[in-house]
Length: 576
Image 1 (cartoon, rainbow, N blue to C red):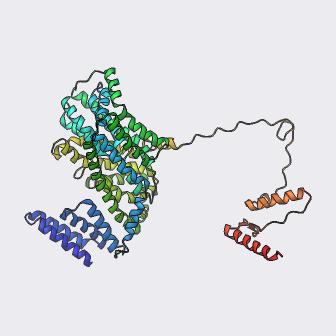
Image 2: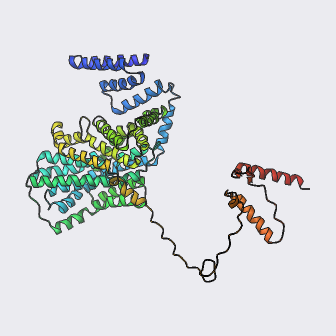
Image 3: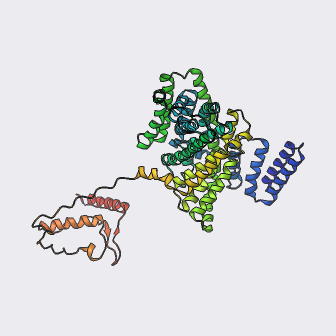
């Protein structure tokens, strides 16, 4: 209680200092803090008070998550001393031992290489040549470019920057409304986390591995169908807007398409190599990420020759900035995740869920509502690190496929990229296109509606997500052996009587199945009897006689080894 009181006084003092010139805001904050302190329990205020204090002090997310986790371990779990809290360090070492974690920095570097080089520009030129002739063709090319680039970068903001910086000016020049152009590219860029390879999918697989293990490759495969489905809906929306605004179409040119293909062949081959290698089993997702870096660097440096030392330094700087922030958040979230596991919070939530008797569809409705709200206030990595370990076992308890649940989780938080106040793509677009945040929010409203419709279909039609996974995992059924007709004179042939059944042995007589040791013993005795000799004395029996009506007990390996050792000792004593 004394610690909570100190935390309350710290937060109240910080609020008084921060809002001393704004009386209304000061009253609101002081009322909120007082309500949390007096009306909530110890643990609840420890969490909410720490969050409030961190917000008032302007602390970054990793400080907030690490502080909440360590305080909960100290005040609730009883790990108050520094030596006891080294358990968090051990958990970090376990995390560092996960091979799949290596894929994240590799994919980040690959995305930076393609953004700084010319791969994205050549990809766009191909898409314009392929789709520019249909109604709304340039907008369709922009969506197709986002889908294709998403299969390379694995990051939503990187996709918005790489494709949006090229396509929004081209769309505006072609007389598309500016709001439509910005809204379309901001939304289509979010496909970067759904179409594989995807960095959030890798993090999700790591965080739920303790309760419902999921292979990142399965998530990659499952993301293809929903990603292409959303891309198709956005492309259809682009066609309708192209007709509505009467946008002139470019004539189809086979020569232009051939030239764009020749110039962009290396860009087109990259996702084929990466995804084809993963799905064919040539390499894992982690190895694919390393291949993507080597491929992108080799193409930009040796083939396109558009990567120099200055751009390479920019790649290193951008990659280190992204990875530094991501890995610090991931590391400090381990403390909070360990607390949840230590206090059995996921298990308690599963038990609570069972008492509510929610059906699968009711649970999915609740989860979608929760995740849409979470996406408004948390970035996707924080949501995965905190929420996913709790929701995954609950979904498994109501019979939802873990892979399907992972895709539902990703799509919900993909929508979170487009919702204020923390929608990352909104801020990226606002900065990239030099527009106010309000203008960008209004621009994405129509495409946000398309995303919500897509979420509903993906949630309640699992085959869209799971069909490809099941098809790739299915083994072809073995053809039945052809029936061989019985030879004349053999039992079963026409006119030949079947032999009388042999006298049932012990296994048939008492209905018990013999152990392997008993079968071997019986075969040895039968062979000795056929030779006219006495049955060979059995070695130390592996099965003891059991009372009538019970199956014979097979001795354990330890018992057999002990008896063999005793027998060897007896033989040694009997030897002269």
